[in-house]
Image (cartoon, rainbow, N blue to C red; front, side, top):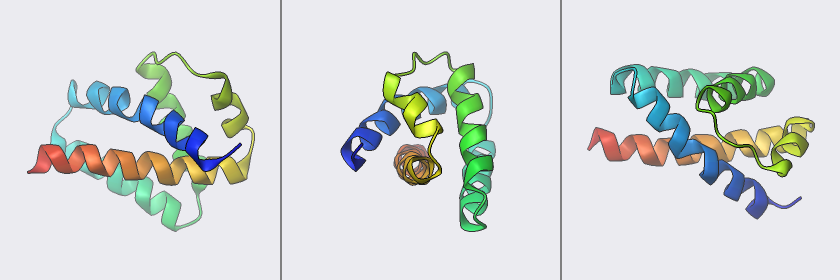
Length: 98
């Protein structure tokens, strides 16, 4: 699996997750969640951060692509996915902060 595939997966789930959150919490709280996920990544708790994202994806009722299971089964792919998701999430969040 290549990074483009993971980037596509991240792009497919990030906006629906953001929309879910924006529908029930303030931008400030979404920022807090984002920074919490970044802190988990920074302290090498990738699995915990990805688990939270997985829960949000399921709450958003996003139809998961077959590649998603492959990503979730591999710590290396999880780390790449986490980086892509956080970058996409930051881009969306910055649009709302402006």
